[in-house]
Each structure stands twice: as C-alpha cells, then as structure tokens.
Length: 344
Ligand code: AQP
Image (cartoon, rainbow, N blue to C red):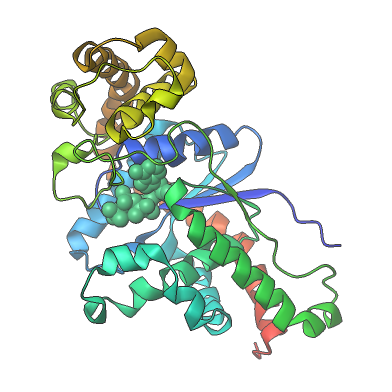
C-alpha cells in the first residue's frame, strides 16, 4: 500500500478582491493547517483567465491576492506561496487529465452551468475544463488535503475520480515502474467551520462571490470600517427577531448567514451566538457584528495596504515560492511522463 506524505494544497483566483467568504470558507483553515502540515498555497491565475481578464488587472489582482494571503497570516517561509502559471507542470498534467476525465463527468459540474449561464456555447473551453486543471493543481504535488469552501466539494470529488481512473488505467505500468498502491493519492476535501458557504448580503440564497455585480453583496478584505458598517446595515434580513436555537434558523437564509458569519469570526458555534442574541432585533445584532468584523478585518486591511505598496517584495515571494513548488512538481511530472509513455 502506498503511503503518501501528508501535504496541503489550495488556491484562490485573482479575479478581484478577496471577500469574507474566501476568508471564512478557506483562509482561516489554511492558516490553521500551516501549524501541522507542509502547505502549498497558490494564486490560480490560469483559472482566472477561463473568463477574460484585462492583463493589467490580472497582474494587479495577482499581487493584491498575494498581499491578502500574507496579511491574513500565511507565512512564506513556512508555506509555499506562488502564482500557478509559473509552474508549467500544472498545464502539463492537466492535459494528461483531460485525456483521463470523461465528458460525462464534466457535464455534471454545477459551477460550469452556473458560470456559463444560458449561453454555454459562448463559454471558453478552459471554463469547461476548469475542474481537470484543478485536479492537476492538487495532484502535481500529490497533495493529500485540500481546504476549500463548500462550493468546491464537487470539483474535489472529480479530482478523486480522476486520480482513481489514472491509477486504474495505468495500473500495470505503475506497478512495473515500482510504485506500489497507486501513483496518485485520493485528496481529502477539508470543508470545516460554521461558515463553509457564506452567502450574499443581498440574497441569502446566493453565494457571496467576487463576481457579483453588487459590491453591497460582499465584504471585501479591502473594505474600511465605514463600508463594512454600511454593508451590514443594508444586509437583507427578515422581520422576525433572532431565534434562540439553531432550529429556528430553518427557512431564514439571511439570518442563518449572519449568525454563521458571527460564529466564524468569533471562533464559536452558531448555538453560542444564538444563546447570546436570541430574541433580539437584527438592528442590535448587526451593530455587534459590525464591531466584530471591523476588529477582525481592519488589521488585515491595513497590512494588505502596506504590502501592496511593495510590489518588489510580493514578486520575490512569488518567484521563490514558484521555485520551491517546481522542485516538488518536476520529479512527479517526470514520473507521470514515464507512466504514460512519453519519451523524455
Ligand atoms: N461564499 C463563499 N463561502 C465560503 N467559501 C467560499 N469560497 C469562495 N466563495 C465562498 C472559497 O474560497 C476559495 C477560493 O475561491 P476562488 O477564488 O477560487 O473562486 P470562487 O469559488 O469562484 O470564488 P468567488 O468569489 O465566487 O469568485 P468568482 O466570483 O470569480 O467566481 C475556495 O476554496 C472557495 O471554496
């Protein structure tokens, strides 16, 4: 049986500012996992261009997202931080995976359906193949743990299917070359905490997202205290007071969302928040949530501003991270080429 070295991989797209959903759904777990694992955190610029990005905006966002990673507490000495396009093995392995994955698997991906909308004929081929590149991102490092928000669960399942099919299709060759127990691990999704799916502040049934047209729908990590207060004051709610128990949140998506955000920011469960605020009106709760969000996010915002002004430092972090990532990915990709039968 092959035993794989525990290794964490995850990434975010430089398609705009990071928001509270990215932070609570993924980043807080990334920071925690640095304590226990070797971690690789990527800025996935190749995923970003599946929807056209102005080149100068992409450069700026890549540096901003890197600054956000560092400001949130990712340590470039401990973890590997780099932008995806620097390491060619992501693209190389994704081509192999495009030939392993089946069209029928891709057709089931709900994120493609949501992002392509009604006019799927006009979506890029890259957007359709996105989950195959994501599988390559993870498996080019043989990563075993992938901390993500709930929306990425289906893509992770596909990555596991691709790993299993590769191991199976090439089983004879893998054994012949001396890899026992399969070549790729089955990467585990780590979807943890009370805010694994943070919803839009304007519509509790829609995910908080960078690409939502309304800036009022999300709290960005770049927002100042006044913007945070304004967005939370305007956040959609319902006319009832807050319930005292979690069961009372059923059918109240906006209340559920705000309680989940409070719980995640204060590091407790939803039941603890309801024990404190149950029976109160939203107005009082929103004021308390604003104070909490500002206290948690303003040090990050300040540090991001400082880092963004130092592009040379950011570029050095990405370059050095890219070199360290490449040193792990290159021998794994060489093995993949030997397994598949590519002369090198
Ligand atoms: N609303 C969310 N709640 C919890 N987790 C979330 N994540 C994203 N939105 C939420 C998690 O953040 C990580 C990075 O996501 P991404 O930048 O790669 O892309 P995304 O999931 O497509 O995020 P957005 O904001 O919705 O971007 P756009 O609008 O560009 O598509 C992932 O772990 C994700 O689960």
